Length: 152
Image 1 (tube, one colour):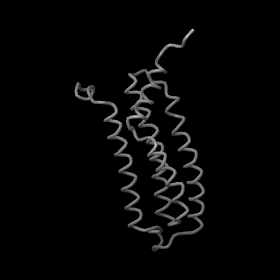
Image 2 (cartoon, one colour; image 1 turned 90 degrees about the vertical axis):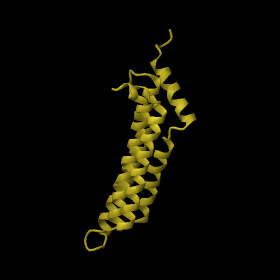
Image 3 (cartoon, one colour; image 1 turned 120 degrees about the horizontal axis):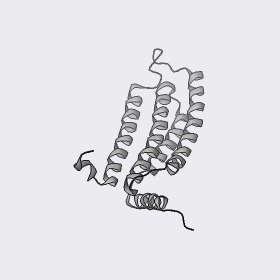
Image 4 (cartoon, helix red, strand yellow; image 1 turned 90 degrees about the horizontal axis):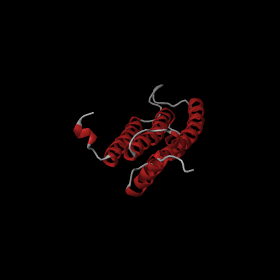
């Protein structure tokens, strides 16, 4: 790692990564909407495939967005609290973005407006991970508390 990288503010880096994840999700959604649902098969979506993928996506999104709240807390990180907060932000945000991207693919293939509900859940999960000042302070405090030895 170079000195300039080591000197970067972890919250600033977290915001850059978070905006990149959000930007990718939004850009892909816009493209999927412009190309149009059901672009395969002559422009006609397969309703049966759409229903199946929507159901899978709904369950997947619920599980993954839930895990995005749990998995970052379970990470045992031997780094400074700011770096731990950065890592947890990236992991939580990436899980939500992954669920959102799956939702965009299902939207592209099915065109079903029902897909928008779990897609909005994934987007909401990603928005909740924004490393604003309050959230960042809580993440750093949590990481600092986890790094302390247990009291006797």
